[in-house]
Amino acid sequence: MRVLGIESSCDETGIAIYDSENGLLAHQLHSQVKLHQKFGGVVPELASRDHIKYFAPLLNAALEQAKLDKSDLDAIAYTAGPGLVGALLTGACFAKSLAWGLGIPSLAVHHLEAHLLVAQLDISDFHPPYLALLVSGGHTQLIAVRGFGQYEILGETLDDAIGEAFDKTAKMMGLSYPGGPLLAKYADSCSPELRNSLSPFPRPMTDRPGLDFSFSGLKTHVLNYWHKSSQDETARHAIAYAFQEAVIDTLLIKCRRALKQTGFKSLVVAGGVGANKSLRQQLEGMAKALQVRLLFPKSEFCTDNGAMVAFAGWMHLTQSHRDPDWSVEVKARWPLRHG
Ligand code: KG4
Ligand code: ZN
Image 1 (cartoon, rainbow, N blue to C red):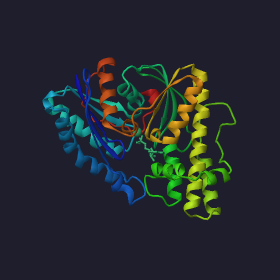
Image 2: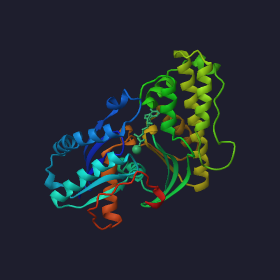
Image 3: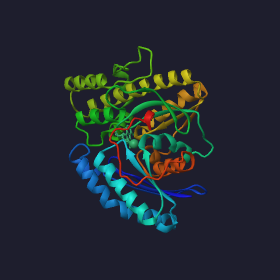
Image 4: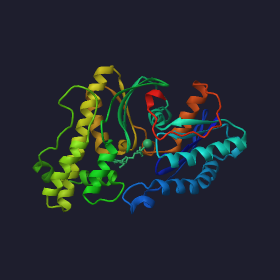
């Protein structure tokens, strides 16, 4: 079975083809980063218009890459939420129209579920149960994945998501959008002397039991620190390093707790912040010490992409037996537990 996956929940247009026998056949992506850069954040209306512009060319490129014709597709999966409602609608309409024209089923996919499942596409011998750390621009969650469709949110952020905290901290120091990867570069290139001279930033909510997160206090701490600093490149390096260390340490403490609580022996990291090099290294150290298997999908599958949608779509087609539905329904908010 060949499933086309369409992702358009935010600022990435992703189209991919997953084949249940041969794996991923094609994977095409267009990033809107340049489009939104001058506004310092995603402009929803521009995002929607840009998705529409790129669906057809990316579909053609994916078909060419897979050496297939549209008529070889068996089903179409699209992200129906959570995300920007206008952007989601463009993907839903494109998917439904194409499916209607080809006479094949289309189905709605939950964006976060797609992030959770993509490790199973990327690493073939990997199956639940596992703990998933979902760290993206909109979400920070620890989820117990007990099987397909069996997800329990063990902890989540009470305010800012991790990617959002990275982006806001970067923006405050005058770094361009999206600040997360740039802030990480500043942190990683902070000199050893500067690192040693810094007093650590707070590790929020680690002094009490539980698995929830909160990053707004850390953001305020960073803001005060920046205002009192020299506001130059040295200050940027110092703050980026201290901020990144505080965030990573907090994540590690909560992951350790969640692994102990569940007794799971595997940890998957999903979402855009999973591309962070230092987070990867420090989680590797922790996993080794705890004798836990740590899985990182490739960076291109950590950030938004069509492959995860195609794969999640295939899982639903073969395992959840939903009736085909031609309504174009998307959800800006869609809690995973009710998904
Ligand atoms: O999962 P994603 O591509 O989009 C959604 O939010 O769904 O995640 C994007 C987020 C952004 O906030 C971006 O700044 C952050 O992931 N990000 C990073 C890094 N690469 C991407 N944050 C820290 N370090 C990175 N290397
Ligand atoms: Zn995402």
